[in-house]
Length: 253
Image 1 (cartoon, rainbow, N blue to C red):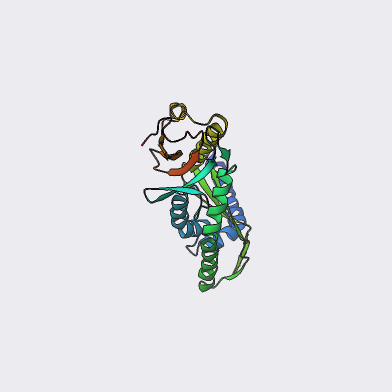
Image 2: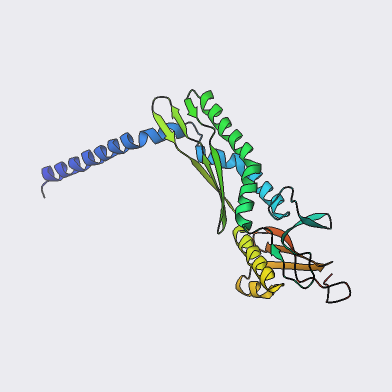
């Protein structure tokens, strides 16, 4: 190929690169417009809510997923919420909390939603101080435990405008936690206790090597502390099932 043709090919390549670059800027500009303010909405909201969400989650987990449990047994200053209970001798317990995971999610949402709304309001004010016009709804918060995560979803539509307009329908964040597995294990234990009256905990440990189960029998109650030895997450609850009259059976202290 002679020098003139090579020069034409090079020119065509340069022009093509410039065209692609211009098209990319046109399509991406609306998204870039918000982020050049050094405020990325998801990151901002995650930093705003995550510490409170984790602290509240850990606090609730010590009470079976409730801030103020109604039915519980106290032991060493802690409240173990009854998930399965009977007042009769020799009888399996009756399930008191059939939706352990869902109840925990609802209680956690209730406790942290005011903070989540404040975070959205703070984000709105931050954009306004940078000269943006912001339209935002208060919205709601969805809280969901999934394997390895706690998902937080802010359903707070927000429109941010200056030279360009960007609209968000929702924001999301997640926290690393093994609480999902602990809650499913608790549900399984409750199913066993309500059917058979007791649970063999070694079965779970064989399948989940990171799982630790502390089981204390005291005054007819069984106190459970489930924990993940890697993540250090913990979840506590109590059952009262297959109770023997005083003087019969064996109590673990």
